[in-house]
Length: 124
Image 1: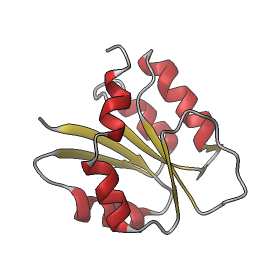
Image 2: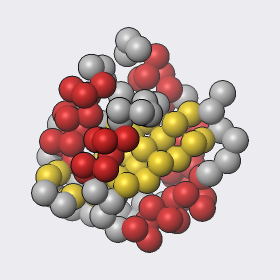
Image 3: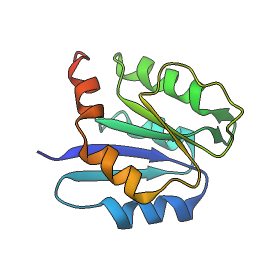
């Protein structure tokens, strides 16, 4: 089975590194630097996992996470990626990664059943 992952970050080099490290038969990866582009993509593609940077142009990760769930009419598993450890994210996130995250930690998370279990609790 191929899982669809959306990743939004305003740092394009991090997105490129993620794609280079994690693309393959198991993951179909879509990356975004602008929140509206991600929201538009939800009309044609439904992600199994969304990775969200906290500080984004015109919004933050918490607000975007809420918008995603509202548009999809279900809670999709989400992980927060942030360099700001002073933030207090909502419980919308099943995992929080500190920037810069360890690529091996990200790989373990992607390979784990942690986010897939969270998705199986949601209705499609």
